[in-house]
Length: 100
Image 1: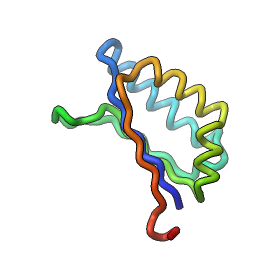
Image 2: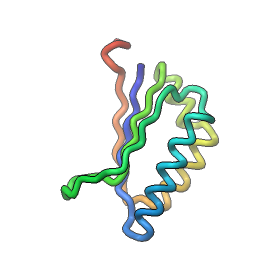
Image 3: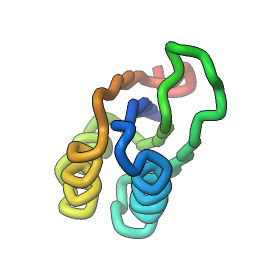
Image 4: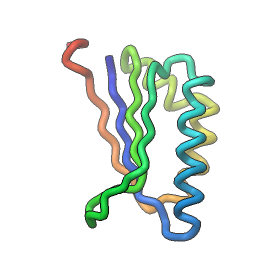
């Protein structure tokens, strides 16, 4: 199993609305990207300076599944929107212990 985690820091302008729109768009990918096995989308409630606004945790059977997700047209639509409303993002991709 492969995990793909991304954390986003959103621009202040229309922040709440953009976070909600991104969350909905990301959650809808489960119905359109066959290699996406699971997705969890979380809106931050921490007030720490280092906190990010939105996080996703996705699961795939393997690296090929993650690659297919990254180039899937529906995912690319979400990426296009997110690029317009975030300041930065961080990513981590790894294999779970059960798949090593």
